[in-house]
Image 1 (cartoon, rainbow, N blue to C red):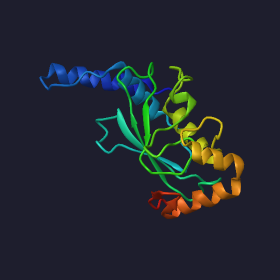
Image 2 (cartoon, rainbow, N blue to C red; image 1 turned 120 degrees about the vertical axis):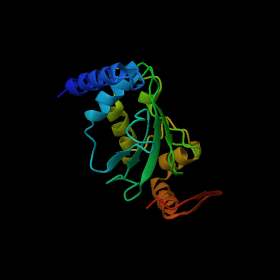
Image 3 (cartoon, rainbow, N blue to C red; image 1 turned 60 degrees about the horizontal axis):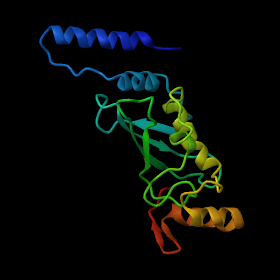
Image 4 (spheres, rainbow, N blue to C red; image 1 turned 90 degrees about the vertical axis):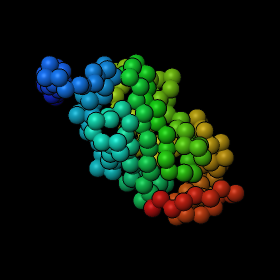
Length: 183
């Protein structure tokens, strides 16, 4: 159900505050759409959203994902979202804050997810992006990698890939790279 009444109520409140001499910040179209998206979130139990700067800064938030199946079962991975004022005409910027051994996430936290790049459309929303990230952990994709080494191991030796993921999540080295514990 669309909660447009809350958006209208917020706009009315902002207008009243402006009349009463209390300075208010006008919300951009992107902020209004993001408010709607967040109010309609339907996340799996293994995903959580937080606002480190408070509810007044909806344009910057964090999502934690704790996969309940697959190679990454038991790990917790944190992502930062930065949303542009022209959202939904521009995809949110997403970075993985947890260093992870993953074919679609590089060691700097960049995420390779098609809907964050060429396949983004304004009809997509934050819920879709979070489900896309969750899907990367349940079914990593070795065909469109950012971490080519991890993708090659996944493709050529899935058992070694699983061992590398477990070692990285437990806090250890994979090759020359150290990963902090995320289990």
